[in-house]
Length: 527
Ligand code: FAD
Image (cartoon, rainbow, N blue to C red; front, side):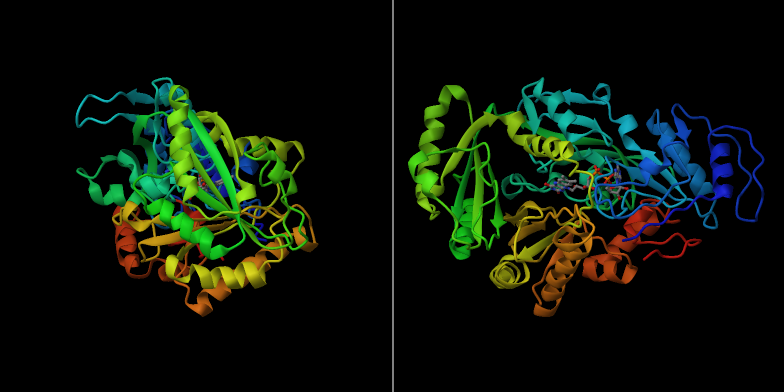
């Protein structure tokens, strides 16, 4: 567990000066003389502990100050001032979305954390309806907006973004800095493939509008760019007519080959479901967890007899959007699609919910876990992208040998198609056309034993070690690397471009220090 607390008096004095409070700033040869900075928002020092926390709950780096920007100009002014201080100043700047990183990625030890949600209000969102042929609808959303609020705002116009994450209490800038993947990605691509334009504050403090046509190098660099090239203050996101209702279906398999073949057939078909995911249930005791909670069995008699006999099971999860006036057409289409699948017949469960209820599904689980004190526990998650050609070898070793149960959190497993990912972005994915997202979403509620961080991390390490030794061709998603060497290996041939962009847009390595990719010249590389 990394737990570092840094309070630096010099930086505090510096920050007070940044905030416009006239203070004597001692010239230690490090700090350049500063004039006061005028802000529409404010700097604060009372919420440093909050800015030093994240969802992973395993890393705490105390910043010197938190900026609550009142405008994009505030973000630009703060970054520009830090840039002007030069490379010998130890100050860095981290944009904090909703702080749902896993290992300090949105933190800044002794630096400035920018609370992006201060600029995330729905008053700052603008929905533009389709202007007819060739002019698709879009929303201009602040980088600090939560996706759930983007959804609420666009639904007022009968519209919605096309590509999602499983959980919507994440920010636009936060997920676009990673990729943004969910069960729609097989058809729509990840969220980074559904952005038309962005406004970005670079590491020099310049405010730049970029798109595939204008400043395209910055545009593609920042998508999946781990916050390294600029702070996304606005994103123009493509919209589609919002579906009204969703038929949400789960079925079980006991055979991994049939499960993945069916998943792959579904993501490759023209006529198919609208969302396709899956998860793995490892329960050697035979007692099934709540994989079907709130679902109606299609055949209650058969379903009540179904029980696991201790085998590993695989759950395929799908949805079909529909208009209640045309429910019979949906029933027919779903019937045809299901008839082609090879799941265990007695395990067909489904329920009908609104589009909003479906997309916000993880929030209901969050509320339940919060009520039990199980949300704010450490989350030693591991997210892997595994090529199709090695997924069976991976499954045999990991689900057959390394893991004994899945009681500490869901294990997601679903395929996506590479052709839907724009290879000009900074996102790193396996080389094959079909690859799987495999997410081990562990919680560690106890200090020792099976529910501890140490236990989960040792299993994660075994899985990664196996992938490396067996040449699985895996790439990590939301990678928690701590050395530049690891990052170079992660980027492979793309490292050169990534590094060039860093020199171009954030030459002093001020931004997103918590990713631990480029140390600021005056700071040692953390590990
Ligand atoms: P933060 O964690 O605050 O920031 C993430 C990184 O981006 C940091 O380096 C930060 O400095 C930088 N950053 C933040 N805002 C900006 C900005 N405006 N401009 C530039 N850089 C910025 N991911 C998926 O792809 N699919 C999922 O289905 C999914 N489900 C999730 C479910 C849960 C419960 C959780 C906790 C996370 C999930 N994630 C998923 C991961 C999610 O994409 C990351 O947590 C991501 O970090 C977004 O969180 P955030 O908005 O809080 O950003």
